[in-house]
Length: 525
Image (cartoon, rainbow, N blue to C red; front, side, top):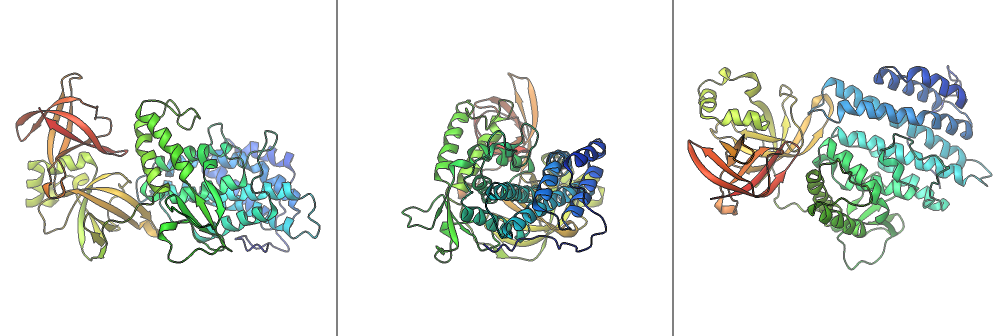
C-alpha cells in the first residue's frame, strides 16, 4: 500500500552525520543518563533529529532507534512527574516537561515510520516481514505514547496521529503480520521499567486497539492519575476487544466504527450519521472486554483482587471501583447527552477546592465578601470565567487569563454570577487546554448552595469539616454531605453540627467519589 505518513523531510547533504553504531550510542548515552531529565530529553531529541533527517539504511536506522528506547521511556517517566500531577492550566515547568516528552515520542515515531517506508520501497521484500512488524509496532506505540501525553495535559491529539495509526495498522493487515506475537527473545515494543503497561501488549493489533480504546475512554473526563490507571489496566485486557470487517449487527452497544482512511478516532456505532463503508471501515467490538471488566468490578465490590494482576494489592480499591464503572459506560453503551446545550454569553466568578468553599460559605466570610470583596484573603478572591454554553444541569466555561491556575478534573467548585448572592456548587467534569493558557472546563451543577457543617465520629473520636448540600425535591435529590476523600465509612454513625444544631446521623451511600472529594447520603437517627 502507498503510505502517506507524517515524517520529516530528509536532507540531501546533512551538516551532521548521525551515529548509528549501537555500541557507540550506548556509550554516549551512559554519559548523559545522570543529567537533569530536561537536559537528557534535549540531548535525545537532538540525536533523534539528526538521525531522522538523513538517508541511511533501514537496518542502521532501526538498530540506532532501538538503542534509544529504554532511556527515552525512563526520561519520559521522570518528566511525567511534573505534568501528570499539575493543576490546570499547566504551570511553566509542567509545560516544558510535557513539550519535551511529546517531542521525544514524535521523533521516535518518525524514525520507525521511516524504517517502514524504506522497507516498503524495496524492490525485493522477501524476508522483510519481521523487520516490518518491528517497525510498525514500535511506531504505533510511539504515536500512542504521544497521544497519552496529550491526554494527561488535556490537549486534543493532532490529527496526524489518527491518520498514521490507521495506515500503520492497515499496512500490517495487508502484510498479514497484525497478529504476530512478540516472544521472549524479541525486544518488547517499548522496553521500560518492570511495571510499564507496554510490556503486556504483544501484537500490532493489540497495541492498535489499546490506542483506539484510550480515545474511547474520553480521557478529558479523567484525572491524570486515572488516565495512567486506565492505560495500565487496559494492557491486561486489550486482547478481549476484537476488530472485524463491517457486518450485519443485531445489537450495537459495545460496537465502534474505525475509518481507516480518516484522520479521526473511532466513534460509537450508535452515533453514526451514515452507513459504514465496508471498503475502508472496520468495527471494534468491546462486549467481551466489558464483561470481563464487570467481573473485576464484582470482585472489587467483594474486596477481592483480579487474579491477572491488573490491579495490585497496594492500589486503592475504591478508586478502581469508580473507574471500572466509568469504563463500562464508555466502552459499553456510549453515554448520551441528556440535556441540550444553548450558547450563552456572560461571566461568572469561581472558587475552587473544598477548603476554600468551606471558608467562603461561612457566614462571616460571606458577609465580608458581599460588603467588601477586596477584604477577602487572596486565596478566596474569586476568579473570572466566561460562560460558553449552558444546559439544565451544567455549563461550559472558559478561564480568564488572570484566573489562578488551580483547576483539576473532579475538583469541587463554587460559582455565581455577579448579580447573585448564593454560590452554586458544581464539579469539574472535563477539561480542555489550549495555547496561551486557554482552559475550557465542563461543570456539572449539583446544588444551588452549600452550608458548612461538622461531623464527629464517636468510634474514631475524629471531627471533619464538611459541606451540607440541601435536598432538592423537584428532582428527587436527597440532602447530601461533601467531605474530603477518605472520610466516608459504610454505616458509620456521626454527630453532625449545623447552625448550632446537633443531629445524630448514619452515613448510607456514596453518590460521588473523586480524587478530591466524596459525596454521600445519610439518614437521621
